[in-house]
Length: 482
Ligand code: XMP
Image (cartoon, rainbow, N blue to C red; front, side, top):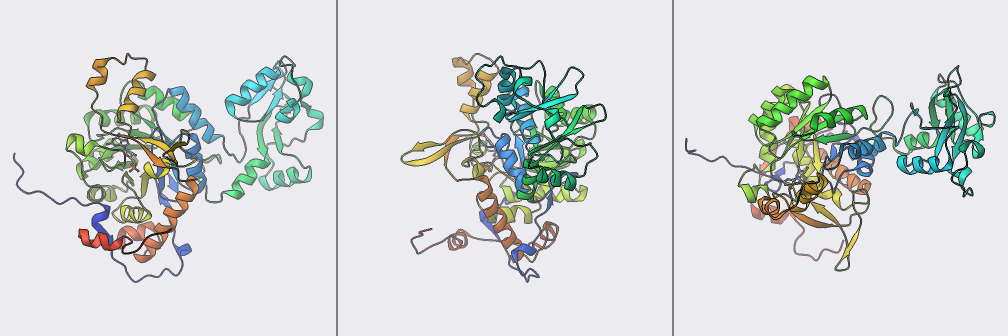
């Protein structure tokens, strides 16, 4: 069949949102609370991309603290990915339910090793019967050079530490920590075994980040990506055991038999786990993923800043049309959409949500921040960070090396990259970027007359513009100074 007519595909810069009469008096009256997936709610509609130059634990922590969501990429071993998820999960608690311990047989060498491994500075010490006998902190070992010294010798013994019953309420615990001028309150059961830990640091973190999103145990939310080949079932199992809140089954062409098979397998093996899948760019793609049982659909084929899929393969759908087409199906099933890729400004966030998405996923915008993996480099006097597509040659080579496969000429020549390696300007903290995006979004929603994202979905109206219209939208006829 030869196609006779060609539909028009539009993206963010092709349209503007028509201003409407608004009930919103202040940006603060706008709620940006949204759904990431069927069962997960976020306080802001921002998700950081599962790329190896964007999201590991530091980024995921920064996102969840602000009310968004980070998805740990999968281009590392299962153990490493689990360790990244664990770092997010242990960043804050209401009560640390399973505090790390050392035993009376442990030495300072063990203390240092575990301290480095888990990134924490104090451990409860237990005897052979797992009863609490003391606590050892970094301060206790400061001037101890002999690594064979037993921790028992330097710890603060139980007789000198304040403990509480597991039934203590948070306000009571806070008061006790304050009154006794202590940092940590171990919770001990009737047999003297430690069953929890409340720390001043966790209480302060909650006050410092009131918008943070938590699981039912008070730990930050985090997602993790899996593929559809090799170890993905084993990976999913380990990630779920570590407390991952959503699995993101992510491949470049998500509307494929292999993705659908993998979705069914994950559902079958892990029941009602929160499962996000993609990427697709059509209503048919979204419909098939939803039918296979996903809780959210990730939309975007080729809009990403480091993508060359459209140039290399000729395939893709401009992102605004892709979102609208997918939304025509997803809305009926109440399955949220994640608009993935191509977001360059807060205006694009408003447009993506207005088109029917519930969240946006950003790679490039967060790649240059303090929280992205990798260090700062100076290039031609400018501070930059490396950013790359996951289908770029560099990313593929690193994958081959990690899997201990031979990187010979044939492997090298057979690669057809669909992404680029680049640098992006240093952009400070992810928090600042989030504030700009969310501030602009709130304003944009107010222009649309919408107080909530649901209202935006109902009320938004686009107008298609010309190149001249877009040129007029940008600063012009003046030298921009800030
Ligand atoms: P932005 O524009 O925010 O987009 O950087 C992030 C999204 O880009 C996708 N991605 C790729 N797409 N080739 C592609 O065609 C690649 O190498 C590649 N790497 C990332 C991905 O969906 C990401 O979330």
